[in-house]
Image 1 (cartoon, rainbow over the protein chains, first blue to last red):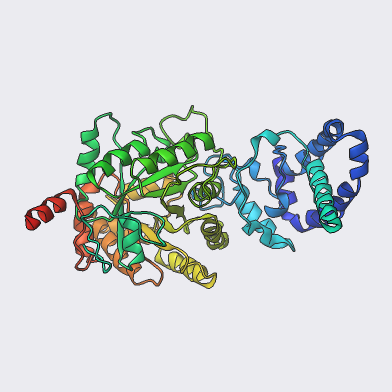
Image 2: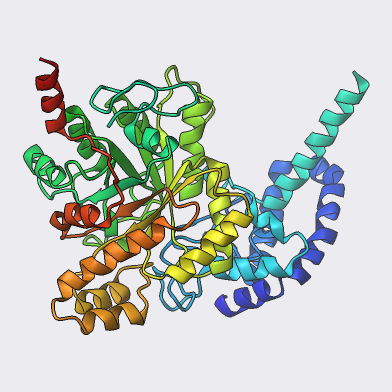
Length: 159
Length: 337
């Protein structure tokens, strides 16, 4: 919902704190995801993610969530799906070129990032989005990646 | 013109060590000259003569011509074809690529094809939304954005690989550009966005129309503080306004254009508004040249292309430079014979 999404970006710092607590939990649950099977966990976890983030951020389930790098304003709501910053067509009042009644997603993002502790993440170049990940859970992706990294480190140490 | 390394402008140039391209634009910028580029409107036609006729009006006054890629989301001849036609004759072109109409497969194919056809410069853009153009019913693609596009082309050139990681044998030797618009919100983010563009591979920047000098100065000051001005060449966009009415129309209908009221008032008060528009443009070019970190100007004279030569001439920014044109090849050949 549009008004909830604006509210969420205004409270970017709060959601940053929440996510900082939430991410390690998701990662720690790796044994659970593994025993259930990441494939089978995909459906319920994805559903939960879609419901909660959909309500708060108008999440489009791109599968590669970068909310922490975009001031808690989902860039996939930009009509040009820009993931690296605003286009040059932003209106003088800060609204979108394509949808004049909507505030530019990146104006929100910039304001949100200024409230966050890790706001400078907005300066990181985002690579082209992987469209094959669309609809999948970013949370499980994060958990899997973290455990993969851990394993690699472990292998590296044992060598 | 000739360069201090012995190469003259009339010879086909070869790529110098440390240079990204074999192009004239990169050479002019790197040797510290004040560069002039101009926007070339593509024809709604399949006749190559129309392309050449449009290019000829700039002869001797520009270092490169931007071939737009469906600018304003209107359909025209493609930028890759325009550039290919022009580089056959020896013109220096900047191929614009917009993310609106093509996905990463099509874009990377055009980059390789364009470089094979002799294109030396590529300008990476996101592109206007389809709703402003003549085909509002079209599907907007936006698979990449301007910054991931820059990264993609830089990867092709510097790492010899596609987005997918698959290798290519010969990389496209191109000088990479991007656009910036310091005149629209979020203002504080704009210099950081420039930093992102540079990090992604931008080597030169052409900006949206600059009519608001104080705002541009602020942007340049911030960019200088971030250490960005040593890392890329900045060419602010300029152009003559035909009348106060056109200015108001542009401000209200073209996305991203900011024209201060003072400029419109000045046009309204003038006897000959068209002449006044040109005068404003000349003054702006001269004032922009004085700003530290400005390496040239990009002239966008939509439907007034015939006035560009006079504007550049009167602004005096070319100094003593003799710019290349197809006829200068003739002159050189005659002199040699």
